[in-house]
Length: 234
Image (cartoon, rainbow, N blue to C red; front, side, top):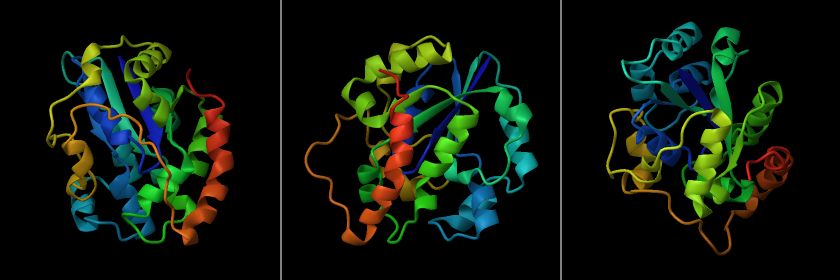
């Protein structure tokens, strides 16, 4: 049995990766299990806040218990999509030690440009770069760059699976469009793009447009991104 904890910031290709692992024949996927806990502790007003709080446990011990629950019969891989900024407490060592940790990174300019379309005034803490590096320093694991994966999905996924010591499956490269029962209740606010997808899209080309008032976030996030980018799978 392999429990994979994939750590990402928002506005990455993390939900597409969830679809990819969900297309495996041996895998169960979990979508952001710490979201309600995060909203309850921070008081932040995110789209669908009340729905999220009603749908997930808000106590840390209950979140961890769910993550360590036995897997369904015939399932040998648990893939969990985590947002790094949702981790507000010292990780439970039993849970952390039970996981193989992986990290999904994306150029800060693209993250900020995308996030600005959803929330007007994000902060560095909202983007999760610093938190991602802090987790990686204590629990190193394979690092996947979003643009590299989009440019060569088969190569990047095969390398990731090898690093996680699980077999690569060709089914990871495509999936049926539409919602999933495993999607969080927040999907209707955030997942329109991935719900219409059937695989990984080619990386976007051209200039990335970032509002002037948010350009400082790119500079603040860049050192964290570069630290992990230096470790990315090739």
